[in-house]
Structure formats: C-alpha cells, structure tokens
Length: 79
View 1 (tube, rainbow, N blue to C red):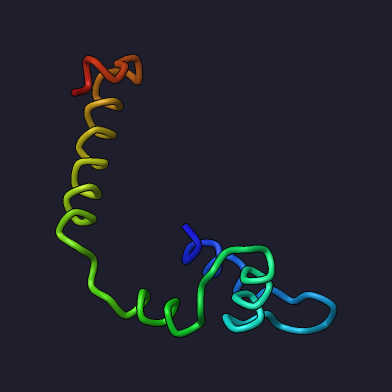
View 2 (view 1 turned 90 degrees about the horizontal axis):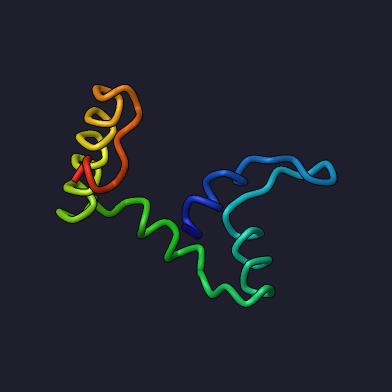
C-alpha cells in the first residue's frame, strides 16, 4: 500500500520541485509510516510472490464470472 502511494506521487511537482522517493519517504517517516528508500527499491525489484500471482489470477476469474452473469451475482454465488 505504501509502495503504491509512493508510485502514485513520485514525479509530481510540488512548489516547483519534482518529488522523488527519498523526499516522500522522509515525509511518510515524519507521519509515523516507517519506510526507507532502500526498502522501496528492494520491493520494486522483487519478483511477485506465488500468493500475489494466484490472487491476481483469481481476481480476473471472479471479475469474468461477475460480468458473464450480468453483474448481478454477489459473493456467495461467485464463489
């Protein structure tokens, strides 16, 4: 979640300066969210876990079932 936040705000221009990973991490640390730039970059380089790959696959399957059934199926019928 924090990685996604950094990705979404990296490159934004604030007060005439382009934001980078280090300034965003500094602000997050001041707010009590402990993350180092090194942790961000390590996470970005890491291959997705088997769990993450499986979750992505299942998300697509559930979405397809929902759409195929006119978008009216709830959680009990989709599973």
